[in-house]
Amino acid sequence: MRQTGLAHAEAPSPQLAAARLGPINAPALHYTLGDGTHPEAWTQLQQLTQYLG
Image (tube, rainbow, N blue to C red; front, top):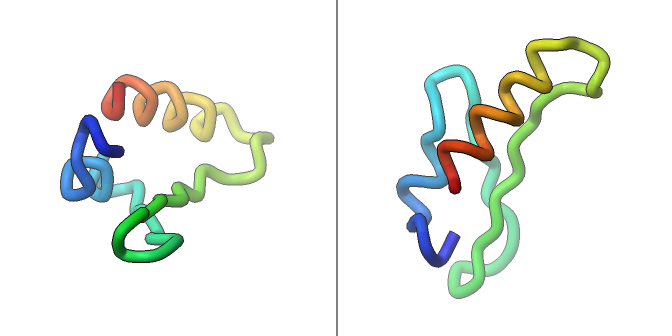
C-alpha cells in the first residue's frame, strides 16, 4: 500500500469494498472475496492483484 497509496487501494472497483484495519500510521486493508467456492471470487482476486500491482 505504501507504493500504490491508500486512496488507490481502498477503491479497486464499485463491487469490491475494502475494510480498514490497523492504526492510522500503518493501515492495512481487508477485501472480502467470498469463501473461495465461487469462480467469480477467484476472478475478483486476479483483478484485485492486477489493480494493486
